[in-house]
Amino acid sequence: MNDVASPILKVKDLHAYIGGFHILQGVNFEAEEYKLTAILGRNGVGKTTTLKTIMGIYKAARGEVFFKGENITNFPTHSIVKRGISFVPAEKNVFANLTVIENLKLAYNGPKEKFDDKLEMVMNLFPELKRFSGLLAGELSGGQQRMLALACGLVREHDLLILDEPSEGLSPAYVKNFYRQLRHYMLENKKTILLIEQNFAYAREITDYIYLMDKGVVVTGFPSEKIEENNHVIRRILGVSL
Image (cartoon, rainbow, N blue to C red):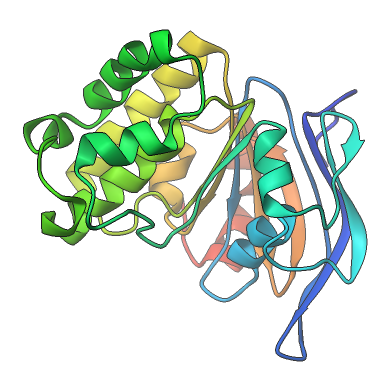
């Protein structure tokens, strides 16, 4: 496990049931402040359920979630967001009848005088959105709506940004550039990011710490510089080789 004295996020023995199925069976992991932590695993192993249980969307049957030292287990989602977590789900959660700019203004929760700076930051990350800033979100392509959902998550004031499969719906070339820019954003602004991803090739380039998840539990975790040493377990859990 990640040896951190005081992680910004700590998940201990998290269990959750959905429709009577025991999806999370004792999830344990930590996210260090100002680092990018990734949880990798195949489809259906409980990655998204973990995030939604952290966010209070699903109820934890057992276990605890600590954010900045406070036990936030099963807090209402709006209360968790208010404490400084920005969550971008895999679904394209945008308001179709609002323009790109209006979606971003609605997502923003900081001082009015700082909105333009935030807007410039996300437009640099997603230049395609800049070209379509006056269009209704419902008129955008699926990939562009995904960009807008990510931009809305980034534009919010946050201490922890949680991204669920940000590469979903984006072209490989765009994802590579996005992850490079995301890493730069994190380092330049001293942000903390927790990332869920299926694609190991994308994640390995930008993460500080990697956890591997399988069948409702976190199997192992290691610093990114020790990827080579963990090739055997990566191959077993993810089905890929370095």
